Length: 92
Image (cartoon, rainbow, N blue to C red):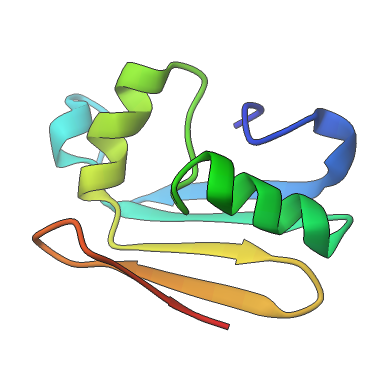
């Protein structure tokens, strides 16, 4: 959970999954990242296409398809939903 941006810009992170990580194609869950600065949160959303990545990019692409909700938090919460067709919806 350390590949979001520079580590000094992250205050807290957490990842919860619904199943065991036997296959990354079936992982469903949510991730929460708390950034120190709003600009770091927006930079991460732009850099990673609004999807929280794991340490390896190939793993992250598979997980991104399976994630149902991702929350990137600063003082205000940005709530992101991913539907079955990988469309991304964001509410601030």
